[in-house]
Length: 325
Ligand code: UTP
Figure 1 (cartoon, protein in one colour):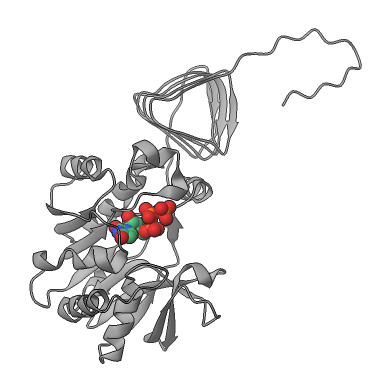
Figure 2 (cartoon, rainbow, N blue to C red; figure 1 turned 135 degrees about the vertical axis):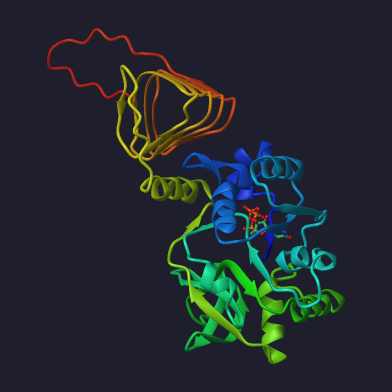
């Protein structure tokens, strides 16, 4: 089974981290975002992937080729005209009506895929959300999709499309995207996959939904940190570092050097990081970074960064009240 993985985006909401790294290579719970996705895909029998790259695509290609032994095709989307356009760029690499599984490269999920990849019809992952105006929304009747609306202005439902699409017959999808592009049909300025799927429905194709309750957003700093926390819950580092206190759950890379520190909970420490005289909780520290003499909470420190504070010196009399911030 072939997966199509669009990762051409710039990741503006995760700046400054995405100035030098593509979003999908950011470390969460000890592994790049796309590593979590690829592990799940390969475990479910996906043996070939078409990856749509653009912004910092060479870094993504090197990582994937180095880490995963499946057949890859990389397609360069120079102008990011929307998700439907990204999928359309893969057309020549997909055989007539070949089934494909499309997954956004920044969507970490925990769903049993085997039943989905053998579904008799096309089927898309959905979950209820509080803020439907940010998503493509599916209107369903008994899990059958009746209508799809991209980022609705009016309330139409709260079942959001979360970025997993099994397309049983890919030819009708590609011809609907052809039509979107030739007739220049855009929503919010982009060629939307939701609009192409809605066209497929109108042509009589069946589309069902499957629930994705465990879906972890990585698009913004606060969601990257909450995903780090959730994924670490299933992880026990078993670390014991002399002179340090470890509050599980944490991920500490074996090559990290940690001295006189309190680490955790919910903290990832990258490869070759150096941590000294520090307290770090609910945070992600990148590879090859140095953190000294600071107390950090809810922080993301990139790779090769250097953050240092200084111990305070105080000469404070009885009954004084001082707050150091
Ligand atoms: P997003 O819009 O959520 O990701 O697209 P982004 O553009 O990287 O992030 P922001 O909005 O600037 O912060 C969802 C997924 O679809 C891919 C993106 O790379 C991301 O994995 N995508 C989107 C493409 O590959 N091409 C497109 O034209 C649009």
